[in-house]
Image (cartoon, rainbow, N blue to C red):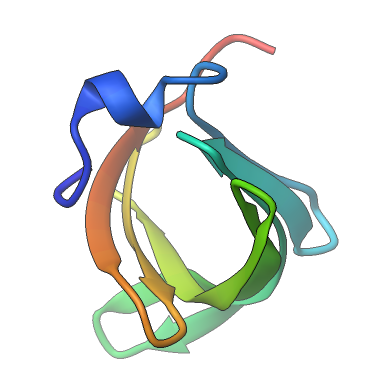
Length: 97
């Protein structure tokens, strides 16, 4: 993640993003846990998954939006944008389920 160090974003659990086929899901990094609601949006340069999220950060409510885009079959890039707060780009790798 661009904004946070690895010691933070893997603090409680191994950071993850989990998205279902219906566009709902969740993510957890550091002390941030949020639910996701999104959809795939087509652009001239390709498609990406755009989502809104809500949840908590150390028991304080947070919400915002973000996007994900596949770089290859094992890697995606994206961005989290917290409403009236921080934003950060990131890279994520697929793990075995």
